[in-house]
Length: 279
View (cartoon, rainbow, N blue to C red):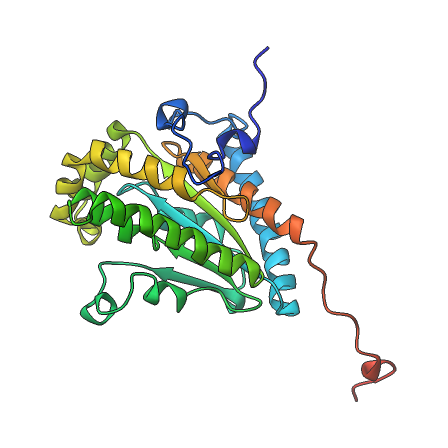
């Protein structure tokens, strides 16, 4: 009998000794796999509902304490499902302590500063769960594929990212980074669906086709970026994402595990409120 997959089987090896793990490859991860699915759609839906309720309670404790911070980074090729993951996994979470930051092409003001300037402003505050829908990794991936950065500049940016994430972790931020791994065939179907449905045209950009033509370049850039920045305090996980329901379950399970590791409790009761009766 095949061994059942564990969450950490999908973790990118930690960066160690000043070098990325050159053995890491997406070839070891099947984007069509559904190792954390029950195999039944209704059962998966019920399981995600249960996860969502638990996430809501955990986030409420986080917000009530206002001490720790949680950062979830979502990256992936176009149509990998970053928006869909947010809708499906966090629909029960109280928006009071949830914030979503989306990183598009930098503005003129942002490009006048260092590449992490705009990102640090979006880091979670105490008591916040923040989701990066795309992230600071865009500022290495895109210019690398376009040939706008020299190899030494790319390596320096990896180092800056490691130090930046270490700073966040040292300041009480728990970090989880998920690469939503879809196949090229699945991306073609999702892009075509956006073209065929007029109500989804707003989600489509002709630049998506250009990026698809550079699929291999982006895949290589992602492999290098993940290998160079997966650390114990900010690990990367490869999420098989051809199945949307499996993708959602796995991200929710990883985030729940992170929350549980924080051992969050509600603040202690206030003695000054003992015996008070509201008339």
